[in-house]
Length: 171
Image 1 (cartoon, rainbow, N blue to C red):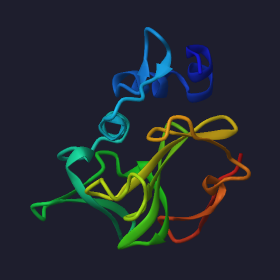
Image 2: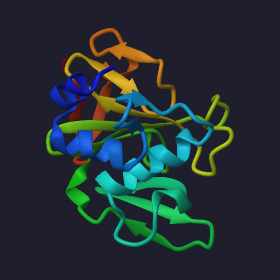
Image 3: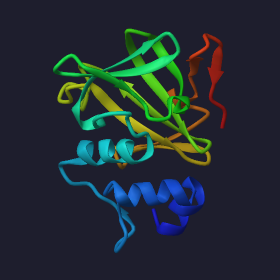
Image 4: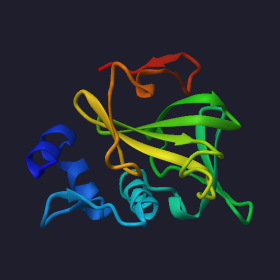
């Protein structure tokens, strides 16, 4: 993936967030594949979807309460997104979602949760993947080599909007 592809497909602001989070190396324009990709992905979340208080790195649980996304910390305190409008939909039950869908300037980011997943079993919030919406595919920020076409992927699944209506993703 080269810089022009990333910049055109993700938009300038999201590209800047990828650089700031350490997901893209500016010198080589290659994805960073070190052992700390989860920390990089959470830094991207902090930059793009900041919390009212704290960091995504400290979150141990994501839940939906009425139409708000709440993040809980290990000490029992909780917070929401600085911009609550960035939370648009979920998949699964509100108290233990399978996926959360966020939106920043028209670009969707999906957080998928799986306690038994390859990544989710190691993360305190059980985040198994963080996917960024591209033009006609989703790119995983945790599994850099994974790229899914929107039409034939999990990401084209039907989400439930925070108002309870269907929230389909379309390519």
